[in-house]
Structure formats: C-alpha cells, structure tokens
Length: 455
Image (cartoon, rainbow, N blue to C red):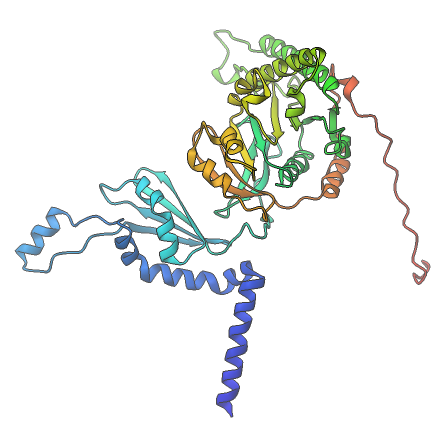
C-alpha cells in the first residue's frame, strides 16, 4: 500500500515539475533548472570542450615528463573554469583560455555548446585578454518578457532601460554614448511599442521631448503633456526642425562663451558640449522623436519638394552637429532606403544606433544592418510574426543582439507622461509648437451602494 502511495506522490511531483516548467519557466529555473544545469555543465564540461574543438594539446614539457616517467600520454586540456555563477535566467561561465586559443573560436561554437549543454542559448564575449565569458540562458526569456525589478536607472544622465536581451541582460538606450538611432519595422512589428517604452522611461528625466508624428499625431498626441513641442504634419515639421537648428546654434554660442580656455584653467573644466557647462548655464537636453520618417521625404508637387529639402537638410544638420548641443534624434520608419531621395543615405550614415523589428523583405533589413553586419541582416529576417516587439539591436561596431520590448500599452505611457507633466520644460524658440491641452481635472469615482458611510 505504501509503495502505491509513493508511486502516486512521485507521479504527482513529476507532473507538478513539468507543469511548472511549461507555465512558469522562470520559477522552474530558479527552483530546479539551475541545479540540474550546474550539474550537467560540471560533468559534461571536459568532453564537450573536446568535442567542440576547444581544447589544446599537452605542452612539450608534459609530454617529455610522461615519456621520462613512462606514463600515459596526457590528454588535451580544456579552458580552466574561473567561476560558475547562477543568475535568474541562466548561468555565467567565466573561462581562462589556454595559450593558442582565440575568443572567436568560442563565439563560433556557441550553437554547438548550446546543444551539448542542453541550454536555451549561449553568447560569448571576451572580458579581457585571455578571459572569456559564456552567458547561458536556461529558458526562452523572450517568450514572456519580464523586466527585472531592479535596473540601473541613471537619473542624472540619459540612460534608460527599453528591452530585455536574449542573454538575460537589460538593453539600455544611452543617448550620451549613442546620440542618434534608427528604428525600423513593418506594421504590427512592435515599433510603436518600443517608442512608447522610450517615452515612458524618458518622462521622469530632466529632458525635453520633441515629437514629429505625421500620422495626424495618433501615436504621440496622447503623450503630449510631456512634450515641449509637437508637429503632426510635414509643414509644421519643417518649421519645427529649423527652429531646433536655430536652438542648436544658440547653444553653441553658450558653449563658446563658457569654454574658458586659458593657461590657469584646469583641463577638466574645458568643455566642447553642454555636459561640461555649469548646471545653472546648461541647456536642457532635447530628444527628438520622428515617427514615420518616409512621410517627411515624400513629395508630389514642386512646393512639397522644396519643403522636403528643408526637412532633410535640417535633419542632416541635427544628426551631424546636434550631439554636443544636447540634441538627440530617434528616427522611426518602415523603410529608410535611397528610394526616399537625396540626402537619405547621408542621414542614415549618421545614425549610430540601429534597431530593426520584423521587416517584410531582406532589402529593408539591409537598410538597417547592410553596412554593419550581414549576420544581423539574417537575424532580422528570421524574426517570427507571432513575436511582436522582438528586434535586433546593433551599432556601427558590428555587434548585435536580439532584444524584445515589454508590452507597453498606450495607457501606461499616457499615465507616465501625465504624472511627470510638471517636468516638461518650455524651450526658447519652440513656443509656437507647444501642445495646447486642457488642465487635467480629477475624476470623481461614485461611491458604491453598499459602502458604509464614514463615522
């Protein structure tokens, strides 16, 4: 009888573990998966490294000693494990490479290592000379994106979390490191959700938001309480961009007057951008969000062609010169190729950051990564349609990573903008583009019928 009870308990326990793995993979990983993975990696490590060609033959000294002592020939040596650290999404394995090994060998073997260690994914990066880090994920963390409760929020700078990477790390958008970026994606690919997440995270910071939304403002108008300027048609966009160029020129005059280049001035006090100015003189940084950039470049009449030239010229000037003046540009669109006309290629070349969601053809992916990394182009074309918000993020260095933005509803973004509406600065020269909105009045919620009256 007791044997049957134990069997039933065992079956129920196995079913509970499998159900936990299916429904709550993060909980399963933290309770059972991490232990199984550490044991699996520890027992398979030497054989896996040998099968993947990541070992080195024994040194001449060891071979000579084996012959002198009449011992068996020593085996090839795998890299030495410096540290194995569990995380909430996987394992981090830090290895000391043997002489003659290269970090590229490990990067090229990540798929074989993933299969051999039975992990969801493995990425490799070199920490320093001779030390490489294998970051393993135990489950598909991009299937249900949950941002960590503790993220690095830089309230003084312009570094905001926007997505989760496939290796379990948080993907940040740092405007001081990467001032201008391009965000591509087809319809329903998650491009607008990425933009909402950006606005939601930028809302609490000391920054001015400027928007251009030529879809009559349907994307950015609901967030207008946090925007210092907003244009919803190409005519207003041209005037707004020229006003930003004028503001940029005025900011450079402030920097010139405060550079204080003299013999008795410390090197750290000499500056060529707004971040070296005293706080009382530092202009507020500006983030320009451009939605559907193709609407700014299309034309059908002579007047629209002249307007287009004004717009593209102003945008090129902003992305070439705006960083030091504290003006950062985020351009969104479905396509961004040379078919949009003169100046587009020059504009795209200045956009260091690249994020591409699902696209409809390979040519669109090449517009984002064709001049950076062919591997990123292939990864972009493989994004499935049932995973909106998934994207490939890269930069001009050629590095890239898969990311997925947490689903941010328009209501969540609107709530964040309304809560921080008092942080919206008034920019000189852009008052004509400031959204005019009624004051927010509190909503009275009627009391329930069964609620007792206060004593």
